[in-house]
Amino acid sequence: MTERIEAGQLVFVADGEIGVAGVREVRPHEDTFVINVQNGGDFVLPMSAVKDVHSGKVILAVDKLPEDVREALRHPHAAEIHNPSYAATDPEEGALKD
Image (cartoon, rainbow, N blue to C red):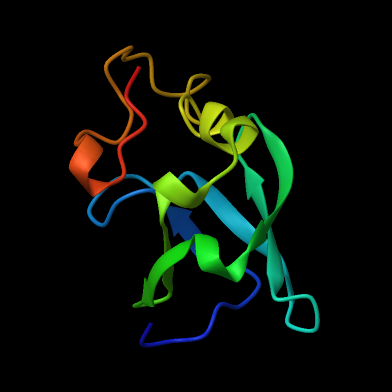
């Protein structure tokens, strides 16, 4: 990782995709951080769930996420993007496509 995770950063499942969450809190003493997934709520994640941090963006390692977080990340923009094909697009790059 080239940067530290900080509250307020946007969270992505793949670089170049639409942001799916925001960092709400960083808990360095627990080696965790809290994200708020749009339309999904708050989740506490281990730092090991981060693939990269750069340009003020947190990229998640989707394969290291609990299933409840993966499910919340499948449709974070359902209320505003009416395109059922939207989700991260490539399973090799951390996609959550149905």
